[in-house]
Amino acid sequence: MAIAYAKLYELIHKKIKDEREADELYNAIIEIIKESKVIVKNELKDELKDELATKKDIDLVREEMKAMEERILRYVDNRFNQLLIVQLIILFAIIITNPNAIELIKLLFGFK
Image (cartoon, rainbow, N blue to C red; front, side):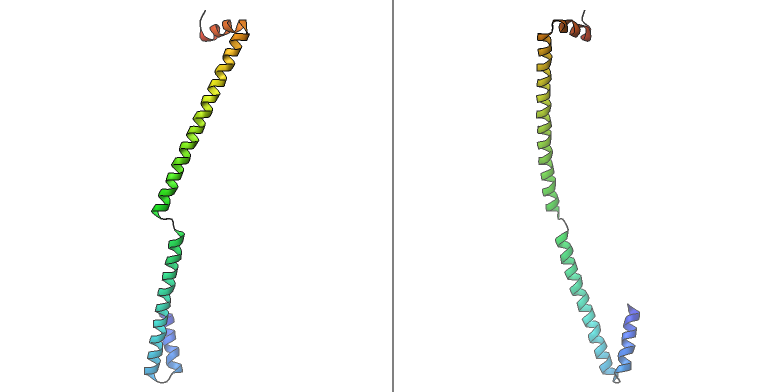
């Protein structure tokens, strides 16, 4: 960047014969460049702030995830209980309808 400033300074001094006017023009151009850098930097900072998630946003997402996890666990637990009930009903139906099932159950559980 310093090389570009030096070239700009030389170019201005070549085109403008009065050294004082050349220095004023050079200083004005440098000031404009610095101001535009600050403006661009601030605009970029504002745009990036809008895109970044804040701690509040992250906390909201965590709360939503916890709520969703609780809902999923309740759903799975409910389905597990329903499956257990269905299995018990089927087991009792087999025992009631099949006279040999009692003997089979005794053999499976080690009773004689």
